[in-house]
Amino acid sequence: MYTQFNERKFKTLIKITKVIAKILFIFTIFSLVVILLSMIVVAALPKDVLTVDLSMVQHINVEIMNIQFRLSTTMFTGDVLLKNSLLLGLVAGAFYMVFFSYVVHQMGRILRDVSEEIPFSENNVKSLYNMSLAYIVGGIVLPIFLALFSWQFIHAAGIAEASVSYSMHTNMIAGGILIWILASIFQYGAFLQGEVDQTV
Amino acid sequence: MMKIIVRLDRVLADRKMSLSELAERTNITIVNLSNLKTGKVKAIRFSTLEAICVALKCQPGDILEYETE
Image (tube, rainbow over all chains, first blue to last red; front, top):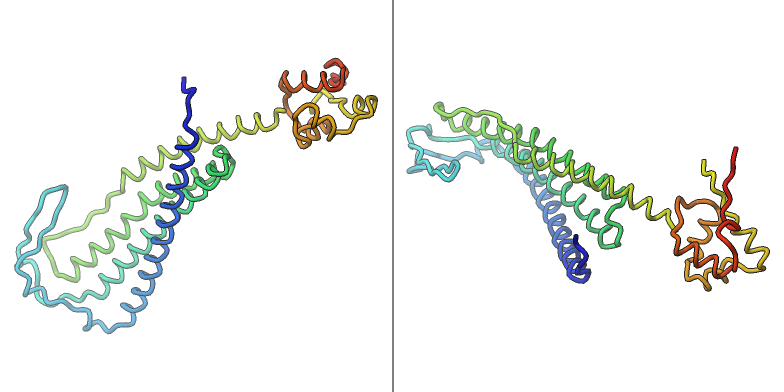
């Protein structure tokens, strides 16, 4: 049974994590703003400004699961119009940033309550359930935007040999399920906390 | 509906003691004593009951009453 608890160490850990969460949140919001502004700029630019001549490219390296593939230049057919690919890439990036900022915001709320010595609050239970839902939905929806971007890119680059398939981020979904279980444990903790709070 | 009624106000009135004075004597916060008096608590520790009985020089049965309907 754990009878020893280093409160000072725990409070220091929570303080540091709170600062990191705040910095991460500011970073994700800043990134989201940059992405949104970039989308406006890219949408406003004429198509011929965003073209790349891939015939000058010697080779392109692609890494899949720690294996590096060298793609032949014969795959690429000269000028590539990047505007739509860039826009879809930025849309995918924006949705990823929205997901990260939401998760970090929920984490910040949890850490705030923990620092106020109320770890098993109803707000923390809600935040954990929200985080788990975000991970599960993100694991299903976010790869759609990635697949769309990849499809647009290979379509624009004229790579006939390539195809795009959709696959869920199963590790995100598994993480979401784990957080859901943790949220249920915290919900029980909140119930027990309520019982203790109503005991004099 | 709670069937255990706390008669703390009655005993306090008999002893001519205020809630704040009882809080001082028992080291229990006024908020907790107020919640106890108004029946907003779900449970009471024996240590709390003992402290109140010592301060009011009474028995637990003087403070707690079971209401049969």
